[in-house]
Image 1 (cartoon, one colour):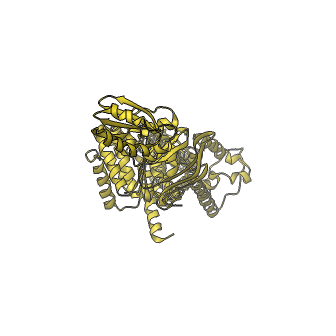
Image 2: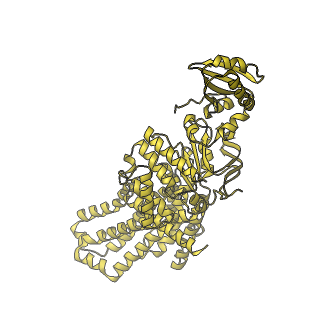
Image 3: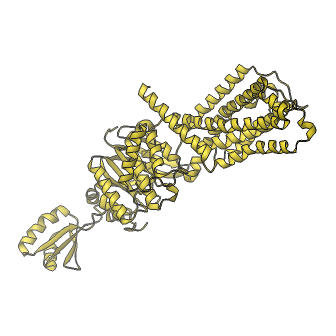
Length: 315
Length: 273
């Protein structure tokens, strides 16, 4: 199996008779990948399978060529921030990280250095010696993130990592994820808040009812959904003039005037639309402010694929 | 395995053992263990306070009195349940606490994880129970004044104490391995623990071929002072100490090995636990 990707080969997981995930085939390349789906869709199961906390009932998982059955090799490469909000009794932020780093085999001084670096990265230096039991929800989320990346892993698996963080905290963490993905790391972020994933991910994996419904860059995924015309929003000074010319094209399904000089165009052939649109602009002499895809968001794609709204921001 | 991997595994075992010792000795949950081990001490203190003068003068009974207390209360109840509480918690406690995944996310083989936790459990249980046994032993002799003290500090008194401590430590190895495995297997390991206690209690009344299936049968081989087990006990030839030692260590090793096999298949499904 690939030494640079996370690979699922025909993986199924059953909890007794209950289906966790079904016949999953995936290849996750480096970068920031969003794993999206509603609660109970199988996101956490997929992440647990990736990290060996669950074993597949069928199929095979490999993380950069390493089987999750070899924790001694796997967790040199992987850091996992789980959804569980529990911690060893009596732990302080610092002792929690030091214990993890000691198990990685770091010497006392190196573990100390790494622990403080991780605490600094998540903004918890002042609370380092306080018991985690007294931390706020956001602080607990931060210490879990510090735990997941304190050993500088190649793969960071994060289950709903932005839950409980304030807007500033979210921005900081998103910056951290982006920075790590730019360094060529795998950062896999699950969320049921599609807007969040839309903003940060290079690619998405959409899961529903334990099955992968789509995977890849969001634009590619959207392009493959032929059942729904692609929507493009045009802002210009004379939208009506543009609309009348657009209706001459066969693949235009709808051209609707929206507020503030906007024109929402639905087309079955996006590339032909963009080719011909240039000509229309030149011919009509309209002044165009913006031309942007209107439904190349994770939310829209998810709605098209699953046929049910997830909500853009609700928990 | 390479030398560096060996060295790393040794360090991981020490880290895990230290962690378990701290949890076993200083966590809030240790309170139940301390209450349990406090029972024989409280009883012996009460005995010392309310002992009639006529009994105080005669220290010769102290040796058999302690032997009876050790066999019927310390070994079969306090040592048994203290081990159950400490070792069941090694895995089951963390599963209930929903914090086991942090250890499972460390780069260490599950065998190392099991051995490190087991070692920590053995050391902390041995420490707590050795102190309890020693204090109980002293409290049995102390009310007898200088005669009791003389007996306590005599070579035979010290040798007897050493034998009892050996039994306690061996019991921690054997019961510890059993309860750690039970903690991995059962959602409520106290039920099998109580069934096993019944088996251990019945041992004196069982035929020899069944006695060999209990730990207490081997543990009492090291007892320095024999006690009467009652009219219905089926007497068996005492097991030679070296056979008892081998039997206890081999069975402990088999149980720890079984625990590491179970741990290798261990999954994190807290909601189901």
